[in-house]
Image 1 (tube, rainbow, N blue to C red):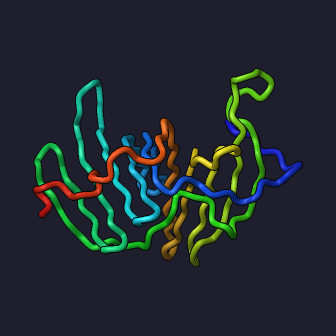
Image 2 (cartoon, rainbow, N blue to C red):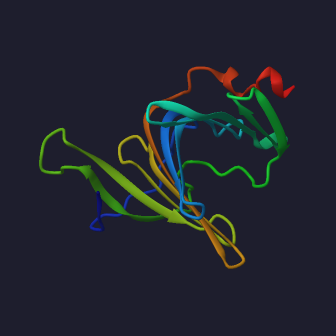
Length: 186
């Protein structure tokens, strides 16, 4: 539970431009959940997701998605079938960061604010990057590390919304070679 206070609005901050984290995402349009690891590179405009869907202790689906926005390429490698598909990216790169023109929504504490060491101060921002799109991002107040990203896109009468929570973040990411598509993709 995040409670935001509006007494003093935070100023947009600069998030790390390269990092790796575990994540959990929920897509409200498709009602799909996914969890895995994300490697993020704002400088090179590239993102890699490694997803392992486990049920009852068994891996039922495992795949990797590498999106190279500057090349307009997206690769999806299925670990089970060892097949790779390549396609053109549909959308422009969207940073997991606070844009300079973001609107501050407030600050609050994740966890317990009255117990020393049991809470973390976060800042929340929102904005409209392009027509029909809206984002909200929650970052740590001290280092501007992304905690939650909410992105909505309207297409006609349909609204897609993806909520992504990040944790165990390592900045910068440990290995840039993860953005090289697997050999099966060549």
